[in-house]
Length: 147
Image (cartoon, rainbow, N blue to C red):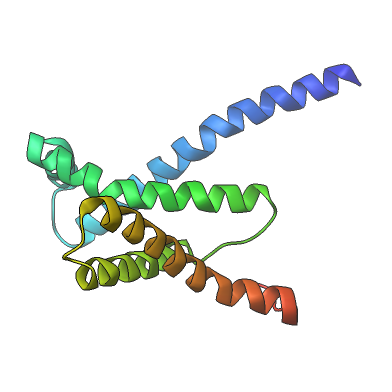
């Protein structure tokens, strides 16, 4: 019995590595097929993709600036999946939180940073919570299941 458990753990370690790598390879392959279908050179497209994301200091800063909120959404969805809850509204929660935070920042523009920063952060949390509360309430009170 112990050997079966250790064998399964070894397989899980390989799958934990191979599945993300396989997904990236599949995505790049699909991209290459699409570029060929459009009459473009896939190698040149990949080179421009890398240069556009990491080719200069400004490109790297722009990539980090755009990727960080999506990484936080991914972490939040991972936490939900670990709790056996499906959360498909992470990006919407981010947008709703950003919208409410921006609104609060514009309304309270004359306040000092010591008051503005916590107010904007709390507004962002409230905006995302409201957006996430809608499907949460539908599931909790009416038994609605995800698609």
